[in-house]
Length: 485
Image 1 (cartoon, one colour):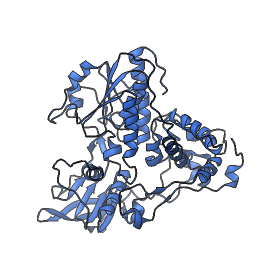
Image 2: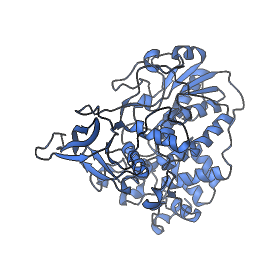
Image 3: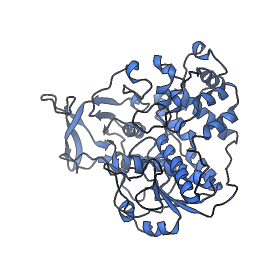
Image 4: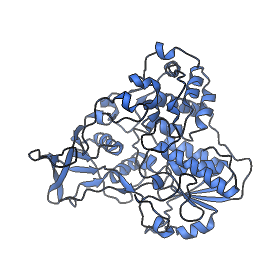
């Protein structure tokens, strides 16, 4: 490494946020990048540790250490330290099609696995990754990579989330004719309609889509495949028209809370609430859907994960009177036991930027019923629970609630329509059954990757699976493949 003693001489220093009062005024990104010098200094802290768990092990087990796409992190850190940003970009893009996505919204398991994290001072890997790709875009280094020769093979990719985009880009670069079918008006899936603009502005997706179009990918918008939507395409007919089909939709069936009062007005799934605001920001019509707005209301978000945090930040920007977040799990420890957890992803107390904007967080709480007036929700009835989620007598309480957002995760992809029509086998959790060896479903020439195959997961896992699925499809079509995994 260029700076052997960098980790001894330089303290960890990461990106800062704009003040809460300022960032709540709009839906723009609010992370303040480091200067070039600071970024190079931070890259110099990478310590040539010998066994860089940050790379990732290639395993798919939960809590596996490191980077799911196996970024060559020590290498690009050294290149940044040396000031060779263009080569750092080439290195980064060799394993990750979309580092501008992960550099903004990945939870960075690589930093948890960093050897310096043994004393809570990991290298700022995510910040460096984002700096590399943003500089690459600013300098015009990211040109379309057009295949030298066409194969004559046609592939349909159904769903344009991160898995679908990664698969489509890799397949186009291998020379195949790639058509992406997206039921909504624009590409991006959860990236566009779930992730709020204050975490990732949508021009970040648009410029990558433009690159892919220049590489030969054809996007078909407003084209649902299967299901009751007027004009939906027949999956069986589509399968006949293509040499291979990749199913890369999301895990869109939300976990519900079927308790008394659930039918009251003002109780919504998070993924009915969040996409509306994203459409408002981009000027995309709501197509007649009734507005779900938090302005002037006491908001309760049920669910303690990333989607719940996105609901909090969106609610505050809409002018919510108060936001309370409920989580049925007990509060995690403030600090993990490094001797037990490192280099794996630890369970510990984390506060998202949205939670830090003023939300009240309650742990080990079960909602027992919704109360309302004139058909509209007004209160939640709750009780504290023990470590087996059993109610603790005498701990009952109520919360004012004029808007309740259910953000308790997703159980599996929607089965009606596409999946039932194709008749692909499902696994015991209700996801599409497809092996990690080849990503093939139970139907010939039909493959699956991302949340539709693995269940609700991270964007970085979707990118990994999309890349690997593309490699399998290329091998299936051509008998061999030069695509990286």
